[in-house]
Amino acid sequence: MKNVAVIGAGTMGNGIAHTFAQSGFKVQLIDISEASLKKGINTITSNLDRMVAKEKITEADKETTLANISTFTNITEGVEYASLVVEAATENVDLKMKIFKQLDEACPEDTILATNTSSISITQIAAVTSRPDMVIGMHFMNPVPIMKLVEIIRGYNTSDEVTKLIMDLSTTLGKIPVEVNDYPGFVANRILMPMLNESIETLYNGVAGVKEIDTVMMLGMAHPMGPLQLADFIGLDVCLSILEVMYDGFKNSKYAPCPLLVNMVRAGKLGIKSGEGFYDYSQSRKAENVAKQFN
Image (tube, rainbow, N blue to C red; front, side, top):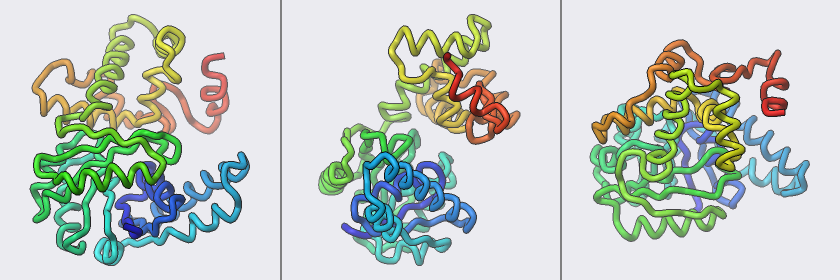
């Protein structure tokens, strides 16, 4: 398995492409937008430059990694020789099912189809293909080149052979794979998202301010960053989508998104990606709010 296609050049997609390419795989990075592909490659290059500066890799390693990545705007062309496809598109069930229908038609019959979804049912996605035994979840953590965990999610029909192959492949990437079953939110987000949502509820109810809530969790619970800052980092729209999937799947009010979160997403306050969420990340205040937040 030396040819891997990655669908989506956004934050997760370019991180996944970076990780495979740095491990010696030939990567076909696919996105419908040339601008997104260019931005994705620029991000990979910047991340590699930082690794060179920190002497974690050499300049030659960087050039080899970049040479391992090809870009495509056409799915059929991009997956022609892929042994594995990792889909990392927006967390939207209809979009993912549409992509998997395309992949099933375009990919060789022995290609394994993986999704980086953080909450959507693998079984549901697999059902739109003719190869449900070869569909699996590979939930990487952000930032992908740094974070060690990969949740490996088995759909109802995912075969033992495919599961073992993807577990072993994840180890080859220098990751630590953990096998979990196919329920809304899996393990990571089933535990994380209610905590983030409760933090937003705490702010919404006026119990404490943004900085105070984050400081309590950082100093009192030894979290590396506060939950509201983490929500900004993940993207408030992504948090909302995951909570909606879990609420729909479990029919339990504890997963109901906080009204404040809903309103912030409607207002376009999405966190770092939009320049403002619970914190202000606009260029004029970025240094102050990020570097000196908790001084």
